[in-house]
Amino acid sequence: MDKGFPTNSALSIDADGTPHLKIQRVKPPPEDLKVFREEVHARMPERHLLDVLKHVHHWVPYTRHFGPPSGSDTKLSDSVPRYLFTVFGFSCNLGASETARHAPESINRHSLHRINAQHVDANKLEAAVADIINQYRRFELPACWGSDKVVIADGTQMELRENNLLGERHIRYGGFGGIAYHHISATYIALFSKFIACGIWEAVYILDALLEQESEMEPDILHADTQGQSEPVFALAYLLGIKLFPQMRNWNDVIFYRPERGCTYQHIDALFGKSIDWALIETHWQDMMQVVLSIQAGKILPSTLLRKLGSHSRQNKLNRAFRELGRVVRTLFLLRYISEADLRRSIRAETTKVESYNDFLDWVGFGGPVLKSDDPVEQAKQVKYMDLVANVIMLHNVHDLTGILADMEAEGWKLSRELLAGLSPYMREHIRRFGRYLLDMDDLPPPLTLRTLRILKNPA
Image (cartoon, rainbow, N blue to C red; front, side, top):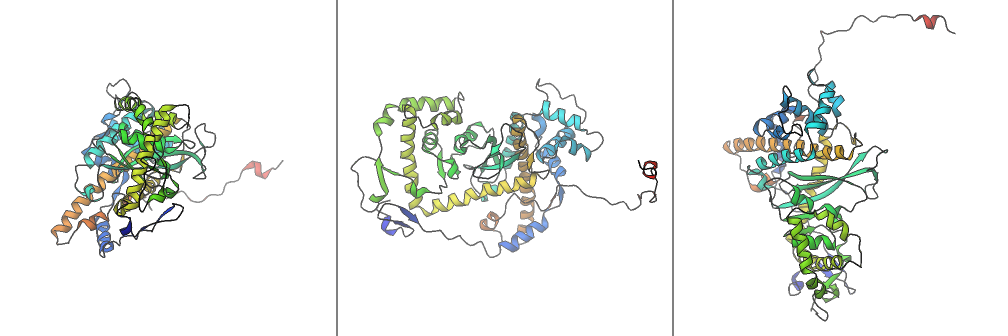
């Protein structure tokens, strides 16, 4: 990087060592992208959300994971429609009562409550999500949007009722509630989600998803915003074989560490401050590897370790060793970040995908922005319900898009990877969430009648 500094026109360094990067210009989209999108959207068949759930279940019977805790048969008549109405009601935040009011007579709120409480839990929802992801990966179109080796993590606030032990006011979002922490593949599909309290540093849970998710995807590149990075996170990700590429807001305020004291550079020497204590890393290397092996064996989650390391205890030498290794990895990342324009462009492009997913989830949860349950278990399930329905819609959209694009190609349309990259499985203009309203003008009320109440004729 020192040799390439004279040709790096985007980077400048102040006398005090503060680096600055020029803002990158956004690459203009293809000229015919707007016409192409309009044509694709016009060809998308209109469907009801329940039909989407039904169609995908026909292809991928994801409700096969649902059932009583005993593992025996469901003992429910028409179990699949009941499961689909349960998924629809709880994912869209309608709740059991409101869903039953608009469902057939055979579906009542008591059965929906019982199915949600006894037949569905977070692990079963994760297994259903994994089934959808595995089928999604079979299509070629998602490869135009990104690599399934890349995942993006970000949190979004979800409102809770104020009389809730888990809820609190978030200083960054400015509202009361909790955080739904999502991990989204670069191909747009939702990989894993966790519901956490507002006061927790989000980086603590950034690595859990890569170990807990059950799909066939094995991502090894992880993007996040500023909340998703710290020195211990960089170290633990490195030891687990994960490349952490966060979008750091105040990256130029971070200390760059020299590999050893007295090491100097011709052009970029002003960037560096302190040096790395390699002896500390070497002394505790075996201890750090034992921790990593425990995580890989499933004995401990990364979040458990990172919560301990986040206490900033100077007495804990293992904590100091992880932080020291994290300084090495973070310095190497920052050097790549300020010298490789393609890496910066990639990080910015990927982190915007999770923001689009958060907007998509707002559309899915049309029953209201406030989570209705005060139970932390139900709140965690609610987030996974929404992931399941979002992934179901994406799988159906990719199926429809593949057929439409094949027809357009047969008709002589000139398609390119740049045009296909301008599409997204978050399309929802063709989906009816609220059903179809029918107006029967033959079903009329009785004539308008005025009746007198005796209590009003003889006032007290």
